[in-house]
Amino acid sequence: MPPVPADPTVLHPMPDHPRVVLLKPLVTSPLIEVGDFSYYDDPDDPTAFETRNVLHHYGPERLVIGKYCALGTGVRFLMNGANHRMDGPSTFPFPTMGGSWADHFDLITGLPGRGDTVVGNDVWFGHGVTVMPGVRIGHGAVVAAGAVVTSDVPDYGIAGGNPARLIRTRYDAGDVERLLAVAWWDWPVEHITAHVRTIMSGSVADLEAAAPPAARA
Image (cartoon, rainbow, N blue to C red; front, side):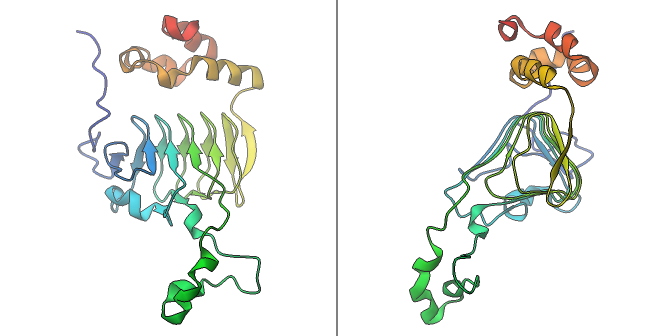
């Protein structure tokens, strides 16, 4: 009997552990894009991810999360709507408080943004990570628990701290290039299913050898 792939459309991939949800079948906002099998783990209410974990998302910036990402409890993405003016004496957003102060709403619209927040494929976020607006986190990266990510993290980088700094890379530059070229996350899910052990524990050469013909071209 051929191996059976997991189902990327199931909200709870682990029925006995409702704290884990796949994000792609959960999110509804057109400003959030999530790839297959990326999941969030939270013992309280993982299904509230869009409102509890994506904050100040008033648009138009998007949050893009790739495939096969693991998000620990409390991972939060701050979007550009959290910005305040900093070019005058006060940063307080008076117009949002109502009354005649609302007549000055133009003072808090059109603030400069940093663009979309983009997470690559196969990224692991530890518990309580905060990602600031406009950050780009590369494929295969790891972000340590409690990190505050204020700047980009390279492919296969390990970052931690507040503000997060690059601790090291998981592979040397040559191997990173090879891993990006093989891009296992784009393989057909049936092929991934047949090579799970290689993807999880094999060498770069093993992964290249396991790639479908189209990925080797």
